[in-house]
Length: 299
Image (cartoon, rainbow, N blue to C red):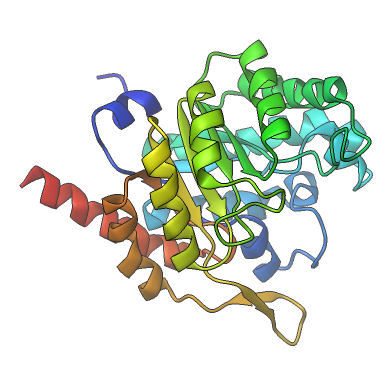
């Protein structure tokens, strides 16, 4: 029997578990603070693979590729622009290697360009769209099951990314915003605006990153009231404090995340996971809570 697709599972009201954090977990495993996670895709691919495998073992239904910062525009800041193709292809291959034995889906992660778009900054719209389309095409050709435009803060840039992805692909598309000012993005965008302006353009709309679990839950409820799309929800494990080695440590425990996961589903989330600070241990507790909702629903 063929594996159900992402949208088929969502349409069947299945609650799915996405993975946890990439960057903060790699920092705990030795990635230097401030270094782009994508550098390890080519330098230490075994570490990327092990993290994916740990998330699969914890109960993830979806793995995101280690390509959040892998547009050519953002990789240029790390001196890796000429490696754009290699990084996106290799990152997808690593995620697929971990996902396929367990029947887990692979989502191609596309983050912001790292540049402010005109008129607030210097990045022209056409250049941004070209970079997003190039990355999307690389991820699609490498075999992702869906694409996730994530950690967005600006309606204009998110729309440019969506338009670019749609120009090269008909794969399922998620767009997720970060409300890092509580229930506003750094550009002042509200969850209701995301639901109204972005929801109709994508298959799934959502929230990731942010600050506290309480604030993210408020944003989730506002988004749910405005969006007629399924909701993707990956909050941070709180806010970080630096340990003696300079590595961020997050104060929300795995038990805390697990206790809140059923509340996220009750508030309308179809896909739940975690962003910064969410370890495989955190994700295991989230997955346990989701499994319980499946049992309750079946009963």
